Amino acid sequence: MASAAPPISPQQAAGPPALRVWSLHLLCFVLPATTLLFGLTAPHSWWVALLFFAVPVLSVLADARGGPEQQQPLATLPGWPFDSVLYALFALQLLNLWLLVDMVASHGFWRVDTLIGWQLLGITAGYSGIVVAHEMMHRNHRLMKQLSRVLMSLVLYEHFFTEHLRGHHVRVGNADDPATARYGEHYQAFFRRTLPAQFRSAWQLEKSRVGSDWLRNRVVQGLVFEWALALGALLFFGLGGFVFYLGQAFIAVRLLECVNFFEHWGLERRGARVSPQDSWDTNSRFTLYTLVGLSRHADHHAWAARPYQQLRYWEESPKLPRGYFGMVVMAFARPGRFQKLMRAELERRQLGPFAGPA
Image (cartoon, rainbow, N blue to C red; front, side):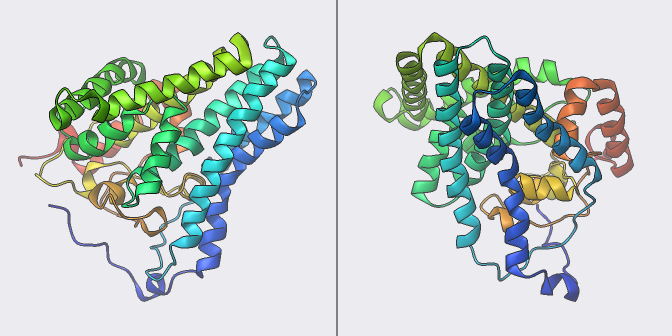
């Protein structure tokens, strides 16, 4: 069973003003705004293009030095200003995708612009597009759910909508959840395992829901829609634009599954209901405000419908050694260091393989 809500002190109950909280969440526009500026000012000299890539690099450094955030949310925060951020990010992702694919089609494929634009768009599609899609798919709002499916289709991963909501959130921390990384597992092994397993899970979930009615099967709908968009890119922007489109989707999915990898790595659920101890959190202030609250993953899994600005800090959840930006770099480039630090935290908290009898 999930434990009661975390205690809130009188100071925390007062909370920061709503405008300040909203303005902090505007940090989530840094990466997509950089990508937009890149697309609007193209073509670039090779050295100017390289300068744009400083923003993702500086984001990793800012995440490492941004300090912790343990402030509990203000209970009276209005919802609409925070929802407006999601809609703006949705529109920005569509615009960025159009601008950069058109850039490749207009100025040629074999350019430094293409390489940097591919990285910028892929990172933005992962850290902004998919994160926004994840937030929207959990809302009890039909329009948001449909916009979420559109965003996932833009990275050829629409089946995630079905698998995440009806698969991962039900089975998280259990051996039959393909999105829960096992203790000792490395990211590359997890990626090879989870990609086909999540698709199979989504397919089985829809098959059990609608049987052989393919018109109502959401996975089939997603495949048709997402590949219609991809083939539309081929038709309107040529082979270079099509390859670029596929490339940004690949980066975005790699980032998504890297985040999935460390959000539950090594954890084993003990109860029938998800608790805050079944997900990894990070205290990073920069991650919290640039990824629309995604870092408070423990509260999200225990109370999935809670909007991002209302997600709470839980002391009892295991804590990642870095913010999400630093964790992605560590999982990719320093897997030994990743294993060592994550294992130490599990052992300290007596979770996962170090937990006592149920």
